Image (cartoon, rainbow, N blue to C red; front, side, top):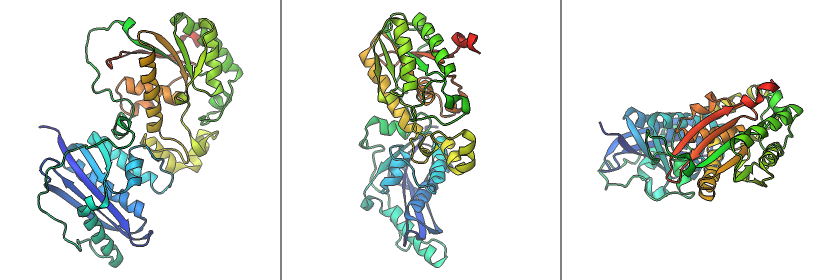
Length: 403
């Protein structure tokens, strides 16, 4: 059976914000415009944004029931579209669990794109939502007060123009690989010549006090600990042996990385260290400097939502989807600038995990199953045509004498 493609139009609203609220969702065949399903319900007293998310959840749930494997969601809520695409942070704690539920449904479908449309192009779902709001006001059952058109509409092209942000926005809306789009990479069982690839030697910085204490360490500029400095010396010698002819050393601008990078550059032969802001660690927002136990105790709901979806950011922080977009940018720049050469990239646990996830075309579960040691080394080759070979993951043999 061919994969089923479905168009979802969803809306929600409240009379009062918060006030009597409801949602509506319409599922269509994108080729014929035929209505495949409708969903609407009153949800009691809620805000506009909560009702809009409930409309999205209803539409995605119906798409799963229909066996859809590709969906375009069209909504007139800029907030929901941008948040689900990973471009806007989800700051309101009441929306994070709803976004996490939506992300889980996206994962069950496969490929989902989110597109903003003007309200006058969302009249069917809007009518269903208004009927549900009327029902919420009277505690009744949602029956459309304005009968939505059941006629078959003209065929619609799925996808349409890219939203602002170009390809990264579409990639961010893909359920399982929000980073680089590797679907067009060439497939071959035959080993490719490594001398034509850009080799990236990915190095996580040495330990800090936060590493040892089990704290969230993002944008805070925490220095290497004494153990971390010893790890860096061993790592520098190892990288110099792996890549004596490295063309460049690129680093996150935070000092725990630049100190690691400078030691590596000196061991190779006094290469300059070039900072790149796209390699900085994820912004953990309100969790910065907190222990893992403190965050679990004080932000249990937000933590569960964050762990369930790469599109969810910590309070006042950054989502992994946003980090993945940064990593994709820097990787593409390095492949273009250093064809057939080796580049040392010194960064943090989150960016390196995301680079490896995308290189392996893995799902988001990879992020929680891969362990990366401080000062560990990973190696991957990237070819200009999109070909990729992951050669080493988390090599720590050089640290054995420090244990």
